[in-house]
Image (spheres, rainbow, N blue to C red):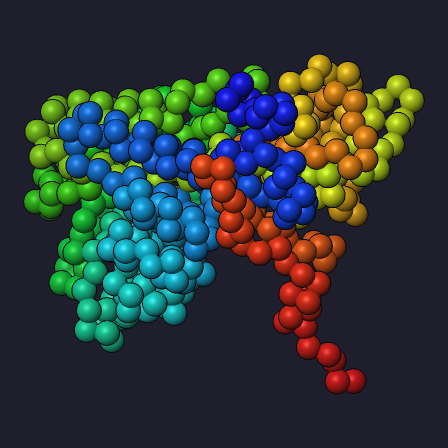
Length: 432
Ligand code: LLP
């Protein structure tokens, strides 16, 4: 928390709005985004490409946080987006997102999803497997349409991150295997289909990555594959898409590079390898999700009950938990939390920040330094913008929180708080 984020009263501000006022007006638990921060990160990514003078797309991985308002902001900043389901695609359509700038990912897209993508002229379909080549061929035939495609390959690079969010290692469910020749076979199939315009190749090695080596490795690997395809098939890739995964700082001990520094290194690695292989310089696409949405998001909670256990860290319980942020329970993810009315007060105790869900594992933080708190205090958990609301659930039939966008001192609800009525909306009485 910087000095600039505090107002005259010493309260935390988000997008120029007092966090306590937001909690008061919209209730808690509340998810708040600082919209300027989203814009600034997209601009920072774009700047690196422009400075390096390469064609590019910054394609926001919308699984990190998908909402009509979010697609609107990304579009306004000239970003592309990637979607991984009919539901994300539907949301992007409703937001008026330019379909030419949408990429459709997924390792088991249904026929209906592919039909929807082709009907709406989604810019690029990221082909993941052989089944999909056949399915897409049938859909294109039926609609008498063509589409741009890219092939996702498994680069055989493991990133040093949580095993559930690694995706690039050889033993992965995503993409075409390289060693066994599957990627070559897939390319031959796509090139033989006149309805598929082969645009380039894609790989994604994982998420919340801190080391440069993995990114440089995947950049080099993709250029090697492109060079091999040029030699073997006379096919020239126009786009190399290195995926996302740029790590962000959640707690003091995290020291990632700035997201755009990762990208700078990727660009340099690609340029170097391109020069060595004599390929024409392709466009470079990236797919950052977390680094765009994460740091911009805050979860506001109100403190409720407390349990002191002699000799152990006390439990301080808030009015949200694993239903609005499952990452601590699922990945042992860590966050920093501050007292909204005075984010810089001295620590008086280390607590376990517990959620309200009926599950022992619903602990938002195992060790949070806090000043003295009392029921009714508002806490702000920082950097919650990626994979927080997007993985929210109604566990225990808790309504999901509202989401607010704050910018230049003004706040707007962009996703309403769910009501109890919403919770039973799809329920049907059983006629027994
Ligand atoms: N591109 C592809 C093909 C992906 O699979 C992903 C993330 C991204 C881009 C964006 O990665 P990012 O820049 O956000 O790291 N739920 C997990 C993260 C899962 C990421 C899945 N794929 C979490 O909460 O940490």
